[in-house]
Length: 513
Picture 1 (cartoon, rainbow, N blue to C red):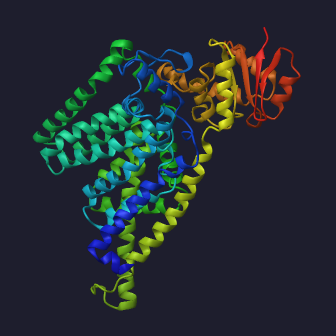
Picture 2 (tube, rainbow, N blue to C red):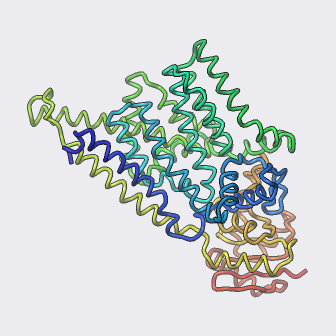
């Protein structure tokens, strides 16, 4: 193994193998199910709205019959809508695979980005091993909602690389690509656009504070604004700035330090070694007076604490590769002094190929297990059958209250509640998706009220919530095994609730006047 690593062709072959395995891992969750992973219901409705409008941006989305402004960055919607129009593939099937494909593309793009930081050194190789095999690093990107998240991260990383070349290396040829990828990041995901702007500003602050840098910064900003203008001008004409102002207020309740701590110590795939390596990498880069990775590791939590971990983790991976390489060099020096007696001898080194292989296999095993288990969070066939029954057997104007999770998860991550309006075609009074474009500062409080509803164990609690929130409904849907144990019996004993549909998992009550 070590001999292979010392050979240029051997290193190239192993690098390609690592990237290929990293790409394949992103497709494993989709192979475990016949439906998009976890979320994506709102995106399905918006994709269909786009096709129905002849690929012109609609004024509002049909999702949940809520008149939600069609203000979400639409790049991923266009990809799926155009693909489903050009090929005999359904939008649902594309939501199963396009996010995985975009997430897979992140692996080679991140390797290219690591080359901008480290060149062709062992650190760039370690970085691609980490991004390929790090447990939990791509879970949210391969889900149905990853249609926006994965494209956003992909274009953010590409934009960061070209902007770095533009300002640090003064490579004028990178300007057009920087414009393109900054614009695509903005058009892919709301937070990705904000975080891309922040990282570009950080790079300019460190490397571009001169006349040429100021001119190039203006060119990048104006170029990205011009390329994204058809989207944001259309939204402004339809709705003004209100949807954007509303969306910007949905993450302010996540504070800097808790989000940073959770990201640093919890989003490392359960591998306690990585936080240590990241801290060591910070020490190494700061000792060299290199501040870009340090800034990238912390800036996202200032800009948007709620979604910062998805962006900051790539800085942590680069820092971890720095830390691991530094640690390896220190071990080699100690090994040469204590065992060989001569630290200057080139052969007095530990077998690096074996170390990388063991480390990579360890990461791969946990990542493979995580990817395989991820398919279990997909909406099940019997749940989809229930929603189809609703679409065929209830009035189009029917309003539903969904009891689905006993208050144990955030309403924003309840896949059943998100997919219900898209598949059943009926109004859900307690689905949260899309409300970020309408509620503004009230979004967080509304989310808390929805969580309180799910915790209800008696019908009186449900009725009080309906009354307090003026949530007029005609139907109540209960997932028997997912709600408080007392609730199904409480409903059966209460007059005014007539069961119109029941399976082993779900019961639907029509609420009598």
